[in-house]
Every structure is written in C-alpha cells, then in structure tokens.
Amino acid sequence: MFKNELKKSMYGMTPIFVIFTICYFLVLIFSKDSFDDRMVQYYREYMETLEGELDYEKEVFIENEYERVIVTMEINNELVMNGQNIDLEAMQYAIDHQSAFDIIYEKYNYLSGLESKEEQVFYYDLDWQNFFEKTSINYFEIFILIIVALYSITLEYYDERNVMIKTSYKGRLPYIVAKQNSLLFLAVTFSFVFFLTELIYMLFTMDITMLSLPVRSMTEFSGLSVSLSIGEYIIIRGLYHVLFCMVTVLIMCMIGLFVKRFQTGIFIGLVSMVIPLALRNIADEKYTIWIYSVHMSKDMAICTYGVNGVWVAVVLMVMVYFINLLLWCGIKHKF
Amino acid sequence: MILELSDISKRYGKKEALRNVNARLETGIYGLLGPNGAGKSTLMNIVTGLLKQNSGTVSYEGRDIESLGKDYRKILGYLPQDPGLYPFYTGRQLLSYFAKLKDIKSPESRINELLELVHLSDDADRKVGEYSGGMKKRIGIATALLNKPSLLVMDEPTAGLDPKERIRFRSIISKIKYESIIIISTHIVSDVEHIADNIILMDEGEIIISDKCTNLLDSIKDKVWYAETENSRVLEYTEKYKIVNAVNTDISHTGLKIISDEKPVDNAKPVYPELEDVYMYYFGSDD
Image (cartoon, rainbow over all chains, first blue to last red; front, side):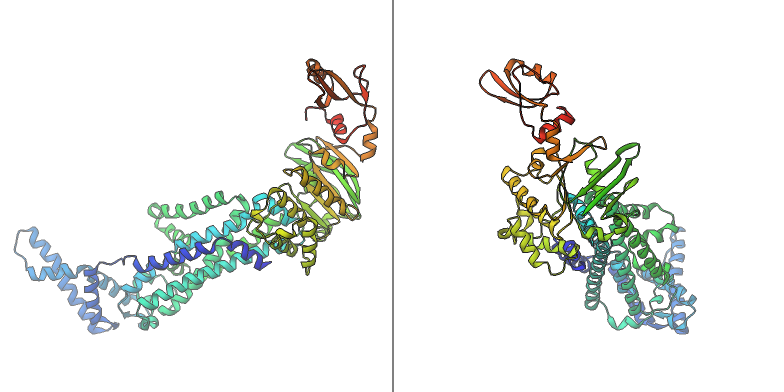
C-alpha cells in the first residue's frame, strides 16, 4: 500500500520535481552574493593578518586600525565641518576600509565576549555567510512540497474516490497510515536531494578545509546555544531541514483533509507562506523568529531553538499525524 | 445473509433525513427507488458505514456493523455514482490497487475473471482515462466485485450508460444475484424492473413500501389503464389523472397510460402494470 500511495503521489510530479531542483541549483550558482566587491577585498586583506585565534598582537592591530579608520573619519569629518584642511591620504584609507573594518570591529567585540577561547577565532567567513544566507530559506522546496502533499491528498476527493477507499477493508487506518508515510518519505527524499544540491554547491564553491572551524565565531551565530564546528552545524541544519519538510507535508495533508479541494488547499498553503513574509517587514522583532521558523529559515530556527527545535518538530509531527488519522477515519467510526 | 436495519434515524441539523427506517434484506436484488431528497443516499451511506446514524442499528448476520468494523468492509462492495477511478492507472492496475485495499491475496486470477465478466479483457492495459463512460462504469463494477462482496451497494449504476451498456450491466448483476445482497439505488425504474426481486420505495426519509416486485405490480393491477383520446384533450387528462405515458397513435389521437383507482373514461382498458406505474402510483407525476 505504501508503494501504491507513493506512486500515486508522484504521478505527474517527477518533472516538476526535477525542474525545481535544477532551478534551485541554478539560483544557488547565479544568485548575487550580499557583499560588495571592494568591501570583500579589504575584508580579505584584514583577514590575512588576523586569521587564527585572537591574541594580544591582533588586539593591538585592531585598536590601531580603529584609530586609522574610525577615529580618522571622525576627526576629518569635524575638520570638514569647520572648513579646515584634511589629510587626504589618511581620509581615503579610512573611507576605503570603513565598511570592512566595521565588520572586523564588530567581530572583534563579539569574539572578545565569547567564553570559549577555542571559539575566539578569526577566519574569512563572508563566503560561509553567503552560503548560509542563500540556503537558509528554500522556497522552491516548500512550494514543491505544498503542491505534492495537497495533490496527493485532495486527489482522493475527486469522483468519490475517498468513498470507494473508505468502504474497502484497508481503506481507513491502514490507508491513511500508508498515505502519510508515503508523504513523509517524499519529504525526506526531497529534502535530502535539496540538501545534496547544497552540499554539491558547497563542495565546488567553498573551502572545505574550514569545516572544522567553530561556527559560533561568526557573529550571525551568536544566538547558537551549543558549540559546533561548521561541518557539524551543516549536518544539524540538514536534520532540521528534513524535520521541517516532514512537518510541512503533514500540515498540508491536514489542510487537504479539511478543504478537500486542491485549489483551495494551494491557496491556503501559499497564503501561509506569503503572510509571514509580509509580516517580516512590519512585525515586532520578537515575532521575527517565529516568522523565520515558518519559512524554514534553518539558521534562525537553530539559533533560537537549538536542539529543542528538533523535539518541537517531532511533537508537532506526531500531533498532526494523529489529527490526520482522525480526520480521515472519522472520530465516531471504528478504524 | 441478512442485513437488518432497525429504527434508523438521521438528522442534518433540524432536517430529518431518515425517520425510523426498518428493513430486513436477504440474498437477492433490492431496487431502492424514490424521488430526490427521499433519503436514499443517506440510507446507503449508513449501510456502507460512511455515515453514522443518530439512532437505530444496522446489523449484518445479527451483529452490529459498528462492532464488525473492518470485517464488515471485508464483505462490502460499493459502487458510487461517479466511481473514483484514477485516470493514470490502466484497468488492470486499478483493479490491482483496489485488490490491495481490499486485502485480496494473489488477486491476478480474480482480476482476469472480472475483466472477462465486464468485457474489458481487451482493454485491460489501456489507461482508465482513455475509457468511455460505459467502460468506466464497468471497471467500477469490477472494482466493487473484487472481494466477492456479500453485500453490494450501487448508487445510480446505470446513469450515463447507453441502452446496450445497460443490458450488459443487468446481465452482470444477474450473474451474481444468488450470492449477495445487492442494493441498487436509482431513478431509472426500468433498470431495476427486470432484475430486482424486491423494491423499496422511499420518500421524505421513510420507507413507503417494501415488497417483492411481483407483489407490488399485483397491488395496482386494476389501477392502470390505457385510453385513447384526441390530442386536444391530452392537457385536460394530464390535469385530472396521473399520466405515466403518452404516445401519438395517429395524427389526431394520443394513447395515454393512466393511473387511477377507478376507470377514468369509458373507453379505458385495464393493462398489466409495470414498475414505473407503481412508482407513479406512489409518487405522482410531479417527480
């Protein structure tokens, strides 16, 4: 039965799945990085000096640079305001390096505050930031999962198919168990393929010798409650990702069982994607985490919920799974 | 095999869809007839376990179908009006799929047997989406028969079929009538007339009458008349009597089949009733 339900769900979906995966891969390759080239150049230069554990020499270097960039900017700005001459060469240096140094200085303050000495490490992290940003929210995958899960469950309501199934020996509990399991299998497969796409992209574009470096050394991961290497973090991220996908298909399955129509289900599914997006721009800061979670923003979710997020996802999954059993079998009926 | 309905009632909000329905069904074919809204579909949904009644019990072989649970579904075959067929399956794949749902072990020979029965052996490997309406209905019947059901429920099984397909359907059902309780719900009276052993007439959520087909026909045998009249008087007759049929006999005259307790006109001759006349006798010409 599982195989049959899998086949039914996948009927006509394989080309969509392949197209979306290719599109996703292309978006990864061709999407623009978030940092401008000049800033990257100066940031890289700084990192050549600073790379490695934070020590006294690096602290002195950063304090000196602070004088050369930030203080110079402040002084020269004042001179300009007063109509006095400025040191053009010094000012040019400060202007060129300011945006790169702002990040360095923020990073320095952040690293100084970390308890673990092993995590007080400078490394060139802009590529990793770009990588995590690009792969954090995967709309391609959410979209395809919404389509597949809703199609799979609402197709049973056309032409009284559900009636023929429900009057069959295995048409109640065994059927809905097989249906949900097949959707979970698809979610795991999809998420794994998309995860694999990310890994392939990573292998070809990133310096994988850096996988053992601590992920918390990047300021973006200040909220992470556990100490992990980049490699470990990517694996946990993958697990989160799979769980989010599993929860997504079960929730879509539940929507399908409620509305029974594909079009209505798609509308609700897409609205559930768009509303948090719109809210992101207007909502209070404290809701941002929830919004990112809804959108499967792995990094934000992991930073906020840590390992507890896995349990939340598992509990949610079990709850929705049982609600779906009841919705299909009927509360008043024997299974 | 006995299916017993005892005091079945069903309400949708304030509307009472079924009111104290009682019936005892044994092996044979039952034609469930009644106008729209009579409660036929609700009754069938309750019999098939898709809907739960507010009161009363449905028992099969003396056991409540609720307590039988999935064992009841093991002996049940159901063909809805628009049987849910997956267009991407071939006829054979569709039967295999439902064979799994019906927990039939090694179903190949049964599938071949049914494909033969519904005359679809040659089209078994074509996609169901390419089938004609009649072929879809036939593969639907085969699906319902997969588990050799002791109770077969069919909702408007001949709707949308051409005359040849209808005859074929009757022939299929006749072949299995001695093995099962078969309930056929329909508006098309002529479809059950030739095959049903028993007729259940329903209206407004109640069973008006339930009896053997021959008894029902006998019960109105002196109430069906045939009379010829001028075309200009047809309207007058229609307003006065229940007219079952009107056929032009020549350019100026029409032959009318009339339901009436008494001889309607002097030239009227009694005729032996058909099931349609019974239906009209109970439900009138409005339906």
